[in-house]
Length: 481
Image 1 (cartoon, rainbow, N blue to C red):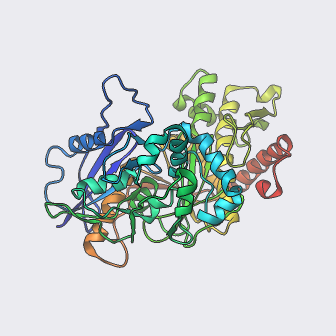
Image 2 (image 1 turned 135 degrees about the vertical axis):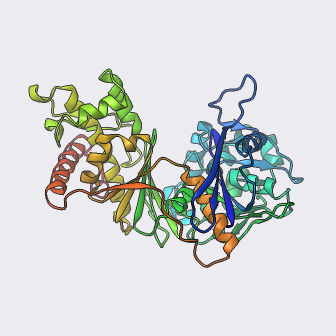
Image 3 (image 1 turned 30 degrees about the vertical axis):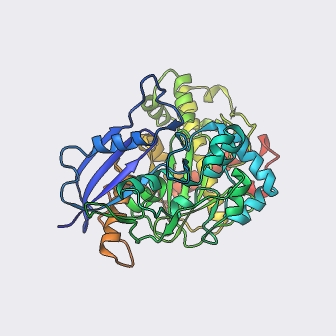
């Protein structure tokens, strides 16, 4: 039995799984937090990447990698590890969640001629998270460091390079490269002109490997696969196929689907990412997801479990209460200055259970709107994978199939990105045209009744849309569709 391993390096920790290369069964696993420098802030948005190696070593203790023949690496997307001409780190790595590049992203959008120009260039409008925005921030605020940078690696690129013993060749994959803001998943090419627009000079860029193409072998002879970004690895670990969508309910909502073609949306609502198989992952995001439920729970003096219990004591439509969940403004639809709105207050609706239900329905209606954005660009949807702790709340599990109008799959909690990295390693080891057919993770599929329940869900969504369009008449017809 061949054994492969997957490493996932997130913002805060490293997870490793060792799997049977043929079936995908997890044989061993480990995890460790990234060390926090003495006196450092665990929420810091820059880090010495050497700490990722310390975390990796701790996660791999106890013989976890014993007998492993190939390793795949997944990591947080959009980061920036700047190296000088000799391959020496110029400054600490900037992480995806660094907020300082917000102004730089806006400057870049204007500098190229607006959102549509960026969509036509790379398939997306650069957000503050994108690597290209961080390059612009460095050029403005740390010009000496910016001038020294000769090449940029993403977190997974850097980890692969470390595992391989610092070879001359640097590599990446199309999935992670599509989040830089200077590689186009539409054309499959780098845009050095966009790098120069951001940084002031061009860079050495990593080779973009094919999905099953190995990055190389370690000095000990272990095969290292191309690696990829965390969302792309999770899609591979979950065994997603065209028509499958993922809704990840963290503080923000991340919604993406597997599609055979790049989606070019000139409005910028859809970001065109590539996946780890040769396909694409068109993505939309909402600013408001789990935080809507946490804030409402706090208002009601309870926790998320209590909120879920309250919501299930109400009925569909929340006795006429509608919550527009734009607590932090909103990205999809584009309402950056909006605030949350609660309407439909009547004597019979002013009860905790109805407000709890309205919060769940409002959050999920907003996500359903985002799924409709993907549909509006030709993305076929047949089922939704719901991820995150909030997605496992009983009220969310009951209501989501009604409002999405699709079967909802709730995978068991697990290291999906690490497992996806391991599956990529097995693919590179086998050298086959398609990835190995691994057993899918344990999951529960929830399906609404095609007549009665879906009619109820349609009524709730129509109630939500009516209020949304009344409160926000500035929305375009395309955004209201």
